Length: 54
Image (cartoon, rainbow, N blue to C red; front, side, top):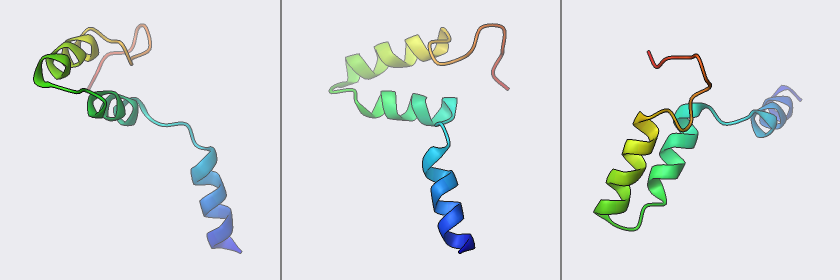
């Protein structure tokens, strides 16, 4: 019962900013696109306004 509840809560949980960034980088087709995507992440594409990375 508890295991089932854990799987349900994991499936409902929104992905973290790090998980979204990793998924975005994984979609890059070549090195140039990867570098472009890394620059977008560095500019704060996946971060909420006013929050700073640790």
